[in-house]
Length: 265
Length: 318
Image (cartoon, rainbow over all chains, first blue to last red; front, side, top):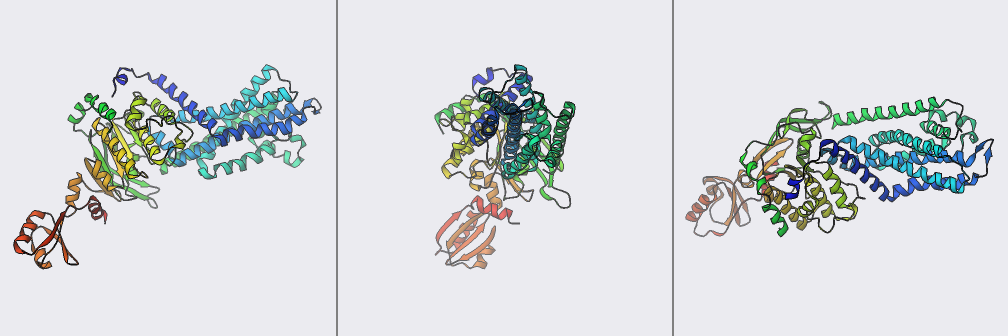
């Protein structure tokens, strides 16, 4: 042992724990950023779609609703949900399959630090995506936003990221690593379409509109739209309750499956 | 061994003294049974296994596929719980975080985060431990100098194994588990890692390694534990294991008949192949002396210890 390690006092427990959380989150984020298939796709698709469909409607109004602003909320949700589902669903399932998580669990790393890092990185990507979309909307889409509205949007982004991170967690525990991206697309894309994240829901066939309130993506999008007072007639509390209920359900199932796996191991 | 590594060893005399003196085992599996799945449909991975690791020794856990080697390591790491029996590491449950700060592990990992640099991986793993080794020391022991700023995904197979080895060292652990450390390495890289493992023992660390390579167990271990089907078959130094497998082989051309050879004391087996005869005996010298006395035409004499491989095959056959 070199003398430098002996001389160094061990940091206190709570300081060390905080440092573990910090480093874990930092490197998870760096990893996602360097993984081009993730960073380019999760940022690129919502940005591309918003440029094509959102900016085309920069002069379109439906009553008092500015379509480019309405669609900003939809694509913001689309983007943040993608980052949460792919970041956690794909990342965690491949860590599990490769034995990487097992090696980490054999170390003194707290499992909570690992989950926190995954969740925080997904939320960071969500914030980046929403910030880019907002900048595009303001600069090229004639979208007018107050600072309060922007702050609220970022707040909803954070809540939405955590909520869909829990869904990513459940998918990672259920689906084998090589199937995870396909399964996530199979859930994510139809759910986004049916909730009106791509095309405003009122322009969709009536029978399809009936499905939307059953989907967590719809409730998140209505919460996001409420920032601009564009939400539907359902009360905001109902939307929040639906989103929170969905999150708890996902976490509950994840816990159940995790314990079952532990017992069989 | 590079000079820097030797300097490292000599700089740590305080590490060795007290630990060698204490003979208490630091990790034990006592009567451990591990069954996967249900009692009826499950498979028995370990069947009443007893195992003890003493401070400062290198122990090799040797056995064919499915013998229960990895299961034993996972139990000692607290990753799984025994169906019955007890697991103790440093006197407490290996599932406790405090125990884990003194343990390092290299497991069979198919892939780790490829988009992080070697240095970043080490930085992250070091943060888990209260008194980690400094990064330059880790790089030196695991021989990663020069590639520390490369992404993990860009490394060769042998380099990746060395990074996994380095991760096991990050916390400056007293006890290190290496599960098939040199799998997939070429012979040169394997010998390089052996040097590094010996260095750990010289630092006073206790090492438990599992391996398929019998040569590896022979080259590294102070003690070999052969297991099969979840049970210990035999245990001892590499020399003892070889001796237990039925003695040395004497091969030569002789006019003595098989029946005569079999009547000699300590002979366990006689085989005629072509014009040469092979005799296996536990006391080879006495047998040779007797044969030379009885047969003056005896020629082409060879005496060989069985390779550990033969001993191993003989032990695990049933």
